[in-house]
Length: 292
Image (cartoon, rainbow, N blue to C red; front, side, top):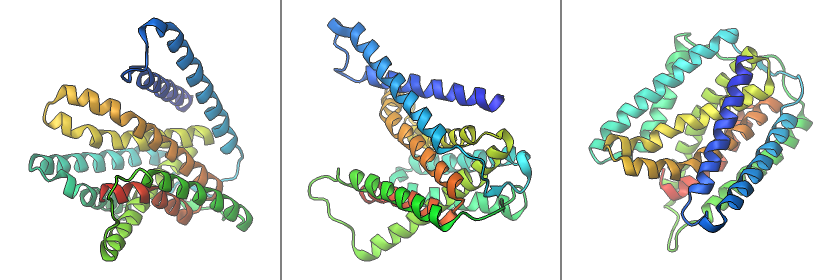
């Protein structure tokens, strides 16, 4: 019951944030037709969220379970502590480098070290347990879901990279290989935390496939938000914070959407390799542009 209420609250919050973003963009609302525009956006958003809900409900339908949490439903709190610890360390170290004016050049490495080391420590000391595999998916389902998910990942990565500025050139081969290796390691670390550990534990706690996928995806998106807004907070630049929050909102929604896709893949196949590969490929395009 609590999970359903929390899922509903998050869904409403996402809808409100999306509506706020749509109507607050400069030049969108013409005062002469404001009422009509508000109603149109509200109707369109309701339709979009309704279709998304039905799609997610269809995608998460079924009863087959491939993994169960090592400590049962009580593992959720421990995983929450793991995420809070990693996020706190990540923010503190990033804050330090931001004050030194070196945040951009260290962000990727700091995130990779923190989000691999903290989960490794929690797992090594038994604070959280690796899930137990119950069964493997069929080869037919694995291939079908794999082709679809990897195809989507390639398309997403390509369209993001298509926005590369004029004059952009790919890095040298050795730098490119290092970047791709970091990308794969970062994707694996995030999938371990948010799908393999958190989603699996939420499924045991809530007994709801839809709620488990949705909540883990929202937490996945929310975990990235403090880092995106940290610079404005550190420098107490409140007008910039409002601008950064509005600018970051579409990215947060996309991260949550990608979390839903990865959660469905994990739920449908239980394949670690597939979710990590899908995640890594989706990030290739953005990382090529950002220099991670």
